[in-house]
Amino acid sequence: MALNDATRLFIENHIRDDIRQLALKKTPADVDKILALSQIEARQILSKKVPSWASNPDLLFPKHLSMEQCSSELTAKYKKKIVEKIMETHCGASLQPDNHSPHSTFIDLTGGLGIDSYFLSENFRNAYYVENQKELCDLAENNFRVLDRKINVVNDEAESFLNEIPCDSCPKSSWIFVDPARRDAFNRKMVSLHDCSPDVVELQGKMLSVAEYVLIKASPMLDISLICNELKNIKEIHVVSVKNECKEILILLERGFEGKIKFVCVNLRQDEQDPQDAFCCFDDDEKNAAPVFADTIRKYLYEPNSSLMKAGVFRLVSQSFKIDKLHVNSHLYTSDNLIQNFPGRVFEVVAFSNFDKKVKKELLKDITKASVVTRNFPLTANDLRKNLGLQESDDTFVFGTTMRGDKKVVILAKKTL
Image (cartoon, rainbow, N blue to C red; front, side, top):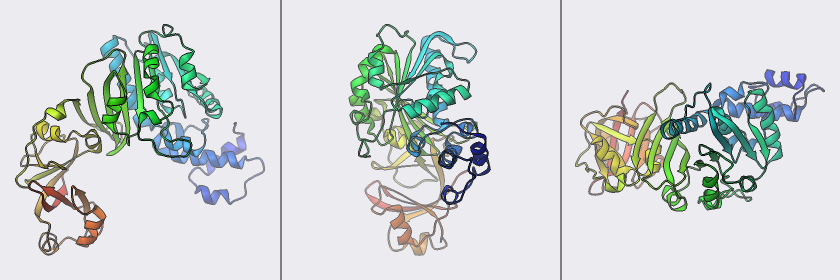
């Protein structure tokens, strides 16, 4: 795959065009229309996910499915920070770009588009991109060359590549990254790491014989307790959200590790300079936490971000921030004093009432628009919005939830600054 000058110019001139309408139009004879359309579509997808790559006219991109499943630039950089912190803390290795550790090797067993390979390999002397699709390997070779990154591209299956490496051939500080495919040949979603390809559960022993650290990217749909049962030597689990949408579960394995699992719940912002909401704990902290349950709705209402929700640290949130939980199954919290830097959304309560026929006439008598949220409530958010006759708006918030004693309530609130 290569772009001639005419095709390159066509892409630049139509980069923001509607791809469906563009496909119906005639193109100059010297323009490779199929290639141009695929590259325009890819760059439009990547413009938000990986802006630094989308803006590079010399990079080439594959079919649509690979584009949708690739990591974003934001999450790839977060993985890079995980590696840097572990290496600097536990290996005594400086990972500055101009001071590479002389004994470090990085292997990406599921190269794909190469986003993770590119960012994670930056601080390693030796890097390998392994991918079983020849087309993706060809594109990766072009892109790594354009980006001036020395990465060895290997067209092979992850399992066979690992089997060809003697256990003592990679140095102690080696890292493996793997992002197993989360759908089978019939496009069905997977529910277990065992169901993904490659099977990291079966490969974990081999991977840890080759590298001291293994970083696994898993679907946010997978159950974390099942992950903990399927894998050994888990050192850390990072639940990663972007703009409060859970995107990835990252599992860090360390050879021989048998201590407590550290959980890191993080909410990344699109602006890299923006602070991140982060919450850290260990695997038994939630079990041992003693929450306090609210007897009424107080001045402030708290909704943890999606990463905390996914990690299931509901009791611990109450204990850690000294805020009252509304109900054992209502993952909303309240307090009289404002908690600064809470990892989630914070609202100032305007009023609240029992959920009955008087809600619309009394609590919401002057409210016609609101963003509606339900937590542990008999109605969905859409059903409650219809029930209350509200149009959508982000200026005012209405929560339907359950209090201690199974009392159903509706809370009128506004978001704090």
